[in-house]
Length: 460
Image (cartoon, rainbow, N blue to C red; front, side, top):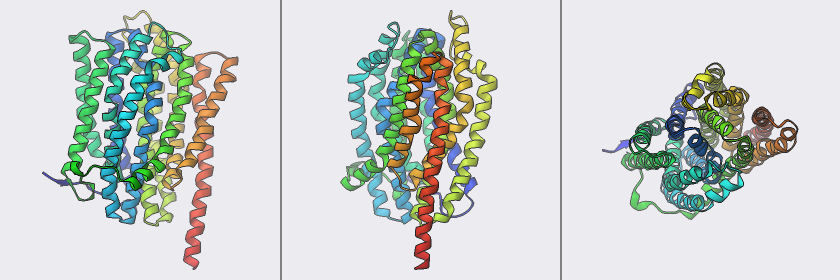
């Protein structure tokens, strides 16, 4: 039975309630998506040991490096569709809906082949401990089979976000997340598998979430309707999606490059520190993903208002997004501070010989990174505002300097002088503050340019 997707009018009315209604389901969606990896980490940590836990954790930075550049193009889908909706260009919206699925399938196959080919050599370059390497390589080979499903799902979810629908992706990931958790337990406890079991469960769950989002769009009415027989690459819209979205993907890749270097440094401290960092990073991921939902709100609301010519509302969008990210981020950071030990204990069995060491080292990372994550949320909001104003490449260059280059400099200077995990982890909040200041300056300059143009048109 067909059903229309309710489109949110972002160009009129009070903004804060709409930003909250947009962001909170999206935050829940991101948290559920993280459960794919968290379920892997928890199950292997509890039932397959610290070495298996380290094996899964050692793959995270590499997965992000190979996936994020292409996944970021879904941001281009979001911006483009939101802008066309603001301009009321219906035919272009329809073209984007069908082009996005053809493009995402192509990109998914490219990333899958790259991952299957490069994963093991890259793990070796990252100084992955020898006792961890075989399991990490096995996990990656299976994981990358599901990458086409992951990328295509994210493109479909980006389409729904552009229309203002963030609830249905949350429901889809609830279903696939529960299935993933159940399959993890089945493959590991019943079938006696290890990292191969949790990787297989993740792949199955990724394709289930893809099926659900495609089914939703096929059954919808109006501009969001997807006809499978009409899926094809529209050259003009594909190039626009890539032009807008690729800088966002490269920006994520820049983060990933610095994170790969940091992961390599973490690997140098041995398997127990890698396991501690893996558990802590998994907890941090929930905090980041919840706040990152406001980044997408900033992009979508700014893009629609820019398309509608409502420049006067863009500062109000910034205010609403800033309040929202603090309402979400500060409580989560406090939870990590006061309940970090209990959270970390979820990821490793108390009977494991390295339990105390993993908890101690994990708390060092939580205190350095997770407790300051609200700064990262503010940084992401400013980045989203600049990107929503139509500047695709500028945020990438700012991030390259503020987040990537500054962390690399930190690793090869400060970390070399004070060679401890704590000093290594402090590179994160340092880079967030620097990048936040730079994005804020860029936003002010660009916004004033739009105000001057509006004033000039009004005077004419």
